[in-house]
Length: 498
Ligand SMILES: *Cc1c(COP(=O)(O)O)cnc(C)c1O
Image (cartoon, helix red, strand yellow):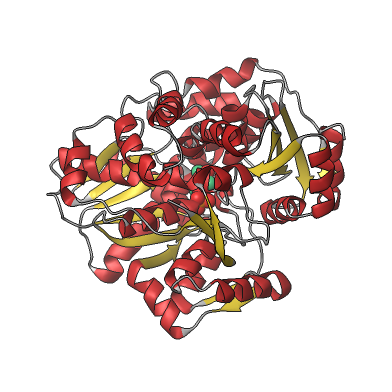
């Protein structure tokens, strides 16, 4: 299996090169040249497997330059029992009738990012051994809240790696901030920036592709890579849980082999939903992929009209991990859906960085709409959904999951398409205790500190508190740096002692 770039498809590299490098030198994203196909028989066989074996079955098709031994080491290390609080790793829970929830937050940092970021450090170190001859890999991360912590936890004290995380100073929840600023490990740094996630992501992308900075790193025997979902190593582990939830739906008797299901994804950088698209293209019977946004609804508008326009107000919402206006992985979808048109993608991405917008042809957007539907939820709707779902089913959603639930309910009433459906649940409600508690209480927010809020939410809802969150109370804050977005590259130099 070889990989190419969305902006130059004459490139051919291995999985290990794609993972170690993170982003292509001309700024494009790495994509597989073709997709492996899974028959229904193979999918049925996978239904009898553990999550770890399902992961091996999917990943070995993509990581063909990894030996079986290497792959086993990576997958077993990532998903071992003491890392995830559910034996199923990513359990599918039936809510009511055809409505099911895929819980992706049982990992160490209580967000779906763990599904990929527990595995990525293993993939990265094996890849670096194959391709980067002894260089130290410097992982630069821009985070809207959850990636930062999940990457820190995955990479802490991993040999021959350093990790630097930048988060928007006012753009994360108190729990997310505490998770990052108390991070332990010798090879980690965390810095807040005066700016939003898009500022952080754009700065990180330009640091990556800056030849001067690269040369200075090479001199010190270091190289950059990325733990954001622009890295193929972040996306490929996410394909696994779509196969896994389909298998679980089979085992639960909710569907028969071959039946189609819909998937609903609370979306920001378009990584998670893109993994569902890959699974569909590999033969998994998925019908519609429903893209759910919060008030930063640039993707809803694009999927409905074919026009992508980030020139609009940026909202800081109660679902901060989706507060994104430049959705990186859409680039990969445009590449595949346009029949691998690298010149088109290059032009569209150039207009996005120059004018902040682009429009695709009628034919291309029609093609995309055959697979994708879209909608968005306002903050009031999110609150109402959390409360309604809790009151009716006793099931507590976090703010991001509630966006997806609301968009799904609206999709069913608009289209009448109520086939069995899986809604991705991307975070534990305790990462956003204040918003969730106030929603459950119908808008009354008690004046409590973060941990008292957690206890109160637990008292009212009886939902279990993840141990990794309650233990933060005892940890001390290690990182208090704040920098302006213009000074991020200087900060990188100083954190690396260059
Ligand atoms: C990152 C994140 C999302 C958005 O996922 P993308 O892959 O960026 O679309 C949604 N919910 C939560 C809780 C997240 O952490």
